Image 1 (cartoon, rainbow, N blue to C red):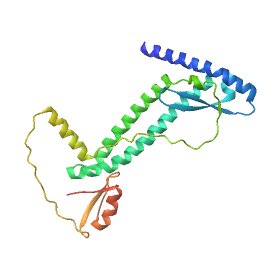
Image 2: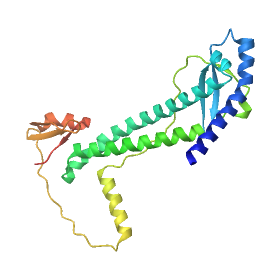
Image 3: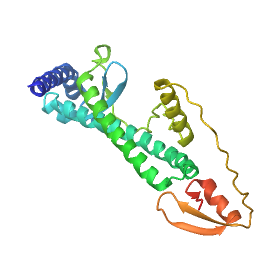
Image 4: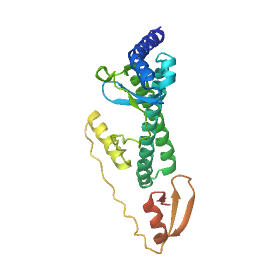
Length: 237
């Protein structure tokens, strides 16, 4: 029931957008149709404005309905593209942070797989919310309803995104301890310090690839450049 009402509201709103844009589309097509092949129509959700490219002739022949179809396609692709680029950046940050898992006697590869799957699920959920939100809120700005621009090949616009910092293992442990301290009375914890033997440059060490899980044994001076790149971690046996 709610779905039907929401969908009916959406269709009604898209019809209003088509009716609002059609007089301008008609005027451009009849008077300047030989100049323009595609046009750009702005849509906004109240917070940001995105440019929708549509075919002038098809929009004219369908009384503006082609514009609505292109609006749905353009908005969905723009949001997915932006979300995917942000997701790839987060995956790179995650690859760096999981290296510290070896100090907690945990498998970095296993943690990487688990955390990356959680990031992917969050991305899908956010994409669905953003697409639905913009489709329902998106409309042609009243002050620019009569503004039609020719669609030209342009460089990709830089989208300013907020960098979400992914906490590393130590930071996540600190957050967990802080949460636990708020939920229970403080406890006296004895800190045990274990001395790790110093690794010489010519000592044999074993390293593991965080992506494939494969292991190699080599001298520490040879393994160090691989560890610094973030693709390999030092294992402690």
